[in-house]
Figure 1 (tube, rainbow, N blue to C red):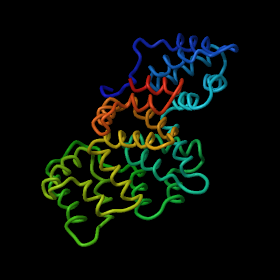
Figure 2 (tube, rainbow, N blue to C red):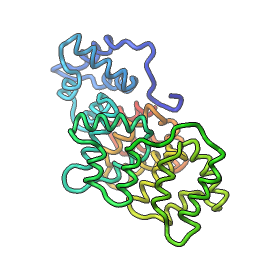
Figure 3 (cartoon, helix red, strand yellow):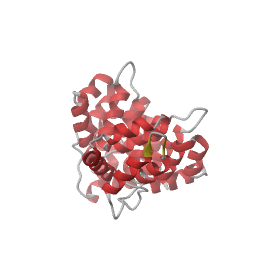
Length: 313
């Protein structure tokens, strides 16, 4: 929580929050500032308790009432905030795979950067709400090494013990021999290593690899791999090495060019504000020489801008 921008409100009074939210939604006008001030300063678990208390007090669905009084991208952020995170990410994955074509970037962002515990919760939510296992959906919508990588990740079989430094040199050599130190690339070996060992053991191995190869592993992954598989493997690597770099880049990409990718921007802010947003902001400033706050102010407006800024400040 030390690196989160949204932390548990203490003291937390969900009945008072529910009452104030009810008062903020009037027929003759909605007080958006009250909604922002409450929802942006409560954790996802606390928001679920506010929903429960609202139902007990008024026999009404708080999310439906909010949707009735709000609109546009501000409504989208609020609905995202009021949805339990595993369920929200499961919906985003389903949307990325339904219909014609698959949004591989969303699959990479969610599945290549989360730990076993989070992915298990997403899997449960996916099956509950969409009547199909996430693994089956991935089998139907992806192919090749990219599919195999995602299947490995959703199997949630990654080791979780503390760093085993005695393995670091051996793992580093296996990575080196599977890629840079051979003609052709052993994609299966690279994939197996990055999806099997614990984050802490792999971080030790990455340090050994840097010495052995005279450059970081991501440099060689870019050269040895291609397409969605390369992008996914780089995401896995960065989520182990320094996830804030990955998310800073992804957030920046949503605001690059003429049109903002608002759905992705919302998802990235909502999913990381309780995790590591302070670190992401630091990396964003280092990488792009401007603050995340300034970038959001330049690409959004109105209550949509206000709520995003409230979540990252």
